[in-house]
Image 1 (spheres, rainbow, N blue to C red):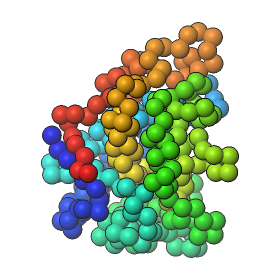
Image 2: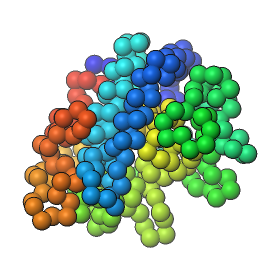
Image 3: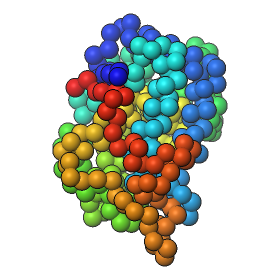
Image 4: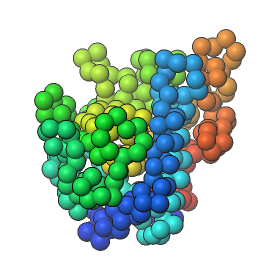
Length: 288
């Protein structure tokens, strides 16, 4: 069993090894294959297709398996590596250690949002964007959106989600407003005065490539979702009698039939059901 650490506790050597492994996966094509997978399963709830990665109950188990697959590739290169997590309720500065030259690099320049510092800067020649390209082939960020400011989620906003004892509620999508931890933590459910909360708000705060289906183009994606995975674990411990919902396939005639997955229906592309992802015990632990 290995340990996922808080990114703020990583040594300079650990940061260097993690960045080096990311660059190698990018070089050999593995990284972009993972970006394509995420983009493929970023399905909005307006359509009639199966939603497995987002706006659905399988948001947490799907991303847990996704991170495990990616982490496995990292650990094939360097067994000392685990995906660190970023607690965005405490590490809130756009110029903190997370965004330093020796780790994720900083925000994008004002003219075109291009990241120009750190190992993932386009000018270094090692991080060309090939998936979901709209303009340039460079990584973009706009930390905090200075021209239209947004803040990272607070501890209070996070607690609002963690306090909900119900995993998810009908209609099992982004419009589920009557409660449900999944929608509150994913961030679609929010008070009327707000558009996003929690997970979604972090994507918007980072800006650039993190705002779309090809969000893993930005390597900070993995640290963000490692924390989201930890938060699911934290919710499970807080509500031990509450389980994944829906626990049975939705009936014919339900508008979400065939669009969301119940507890034992297999999640593509791995054909693993949410039930198999309810626990990570024996695989990895979180340093708290």
